[in-house]
Image (cartoon, rainbow, N blue to C red; front, side, top):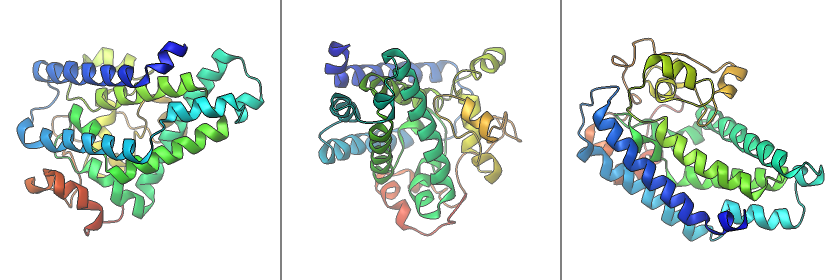
Length: 270
């Protein structure tokens, strides 16, 4: 376990790179939707924002969420530590707590107008593929990290649970944004345990009541539990329109335009 935690960065980078390449290949071989905008028009900015986010987070927070969890765990902070929950159960509970936190955070970023201005950059992508899962505004990423650190401290999430969650969140964010055609029978079975591309694609519909559904990233249970689950888009996956109404010009796909979108006019909520 110590070796795994000590190699957090290589593990995360290796998983991220391998899955990104694999999903990109699978998207080319088994696309769910025909894409009208070439990858060459969208991918440089989507990958560029991921690089910007990495630099910003590493520059402002030298200690990672896993490192913070290790320090807090050593001091016995948090409810899981105080309750003396067995180690393995503590990892499971900690993972679930973080996943519920991300679900709740996602809902809040849709409902609070100022936060929606940050989050809508993610929704302003005009296509839906693996790189959409990397497209988040740096300020949103920083706020998400602060929320995560607060929850880790309050709940006493074990470091191993934090590492597992971080790797899973990166992986599922790319997977459930993939333009990937899965057999419908397989998709129905898989979405009982994890958010699938067809399930999450509904969330990127231009239709407001569809945008306000399917908020989960890892696990699909929260949407079902809290009544935000929608099985399919009204127009079907081939016919639905991706994005939001106010940023539909191709120039909005540039990195510089993406970064200043929160400062520009637009509807406060989807």
